[in-house]
Length: 91
Length: 373
Image (cartoon, rainbow over all chains, first blue to last red; front, side, top):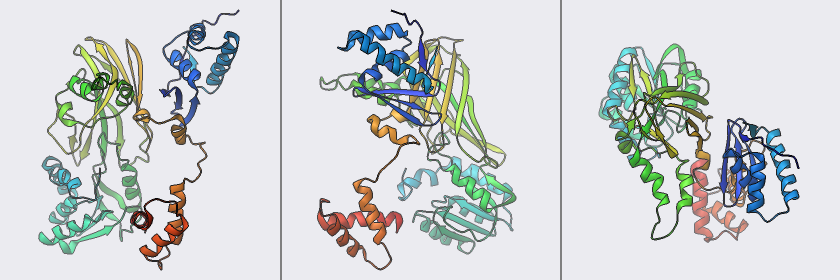
């Protein structure tokens, strides 16, 4: 298994808020809004707290009743999507 | 703030410090040939002062009926012949001639609140003679980190305390994203550093009020930083009038932009503050300290499900709500022939599911009529 020690952070003009087991990211540069489900919201919370990607995988696996490989794949996909949209950046 | 009622104008009309500063500025530019536009005139105080200083004509532009009071005051002061009320928004009225002076109180709390300055720019570009005078003609937003335990405790930390043994702490995340206008408590706060200018607007030339500003602060006094106090100063003629919490009072209130959790700071620490506020948009503030970065925004000042928040996105595709359909129906039938009662009956027949029957329909039609009729 590959290790992912990279740490990400929210891009400079991006805001994140968790609300009632969902989350939302707002990019102030264009006003675009990105909705997150419960797992996604928790993942972004962990990103904002400067956890490494490996640490995020571990925490999500502990907190949610999911298959590790599926969780890892879905989390990686979401992270890549946030990177592509410029909502998170490597720190 | 509501400007339709007298109570909304009392603090402004009777603000002696502000009005004296405006009168001094007017005295420097108003002469017997001057034509003056008092924009957002309210009770017309500045227009009355301009007329008393000898202006040839004064136009009061005021959308609310309260402007009629200005005409009564003009009569009572023997100035009625030179004062004309143009009732409406500046974008909707036709000022009959170009003017020499525009006087306005379109600076909101912390300058940009209420988004009135774009209307000032409109008036300037459309009705001010070349070389004419604007009062005010410059405005600067300022802010300083503050130790404000009383304000922070009242508005934010108090949510973390049980209320009748109930946990309401989830409200705290909204409290920390709210801007508070509380002059009394901000007067008792202590600056932790010298204030810094955030945004300088040349009102004679500015075309927008988008704000992306940042400032660095060197902490001069150790303590707990609970947030930033924000205010503005503006130039009236040759003099500046400041709305800072540590200056004599004016009707404007300084703003408190909280930082939560508060930051413990020592003398010499560096703080960085960034403010992002697009015209007519939310306020967002970013604070960097040795403890990391904190982000706050009025976007999150109240609980909104992500679906509701997504409406701010420019690529959101809205559809018309039920309320929108009834509004559209009423507007489509407001033709100058049907009475309010006719419209209410039509509405009630068309939308029988609307609760409250004819009375509710009548109230709804009146509401639409007040805004668009």
